Image 1 (cartoon, rainbow, N blue to C red):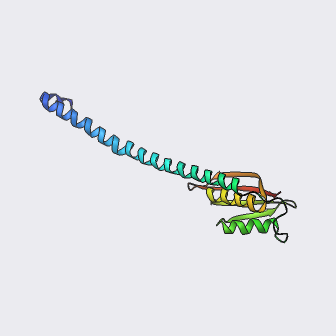
Image 2 (cartoon, rainbow, N blue to C red):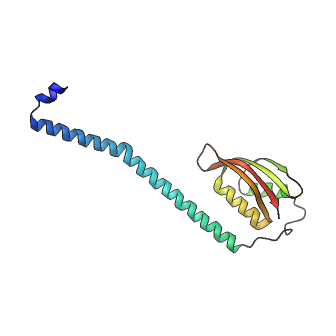
Image 3 (cartoon, rainbow, N blue to C red):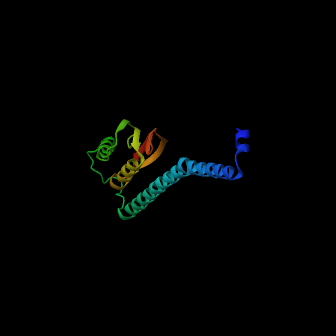
Length: 154
């Protein structure tokens, strides 16, 4: 290979070197830089969407005063309130069990994080139910979480 390259005329060597440099540049751009830019744009759009959601939730929390404790319907237990609001938000609760007279522990599998936050805001704002503790982990799919949430009535 070296002997072949040395047998080329100087002008041919420069053309060959320039072609190799251009080829490396095109491969680098097409294989590395372009996908990185596309992923960066996608992530930026996701961040902007989450920031808008956060602002909307902040406005919702400030504009809708939380009900004082005891304003929910007396015939609805906390378990019923949690199950019905979860279904209304499209969440599938895999397990729920009462935790004392005013608490419930809920286990969720592969639920959208945004929907989970909206559901918890509804529970707090409408039914005076707060999160006592939450253990969440990411699911296999982006944007989904698994976890256990402990809720209690104020």
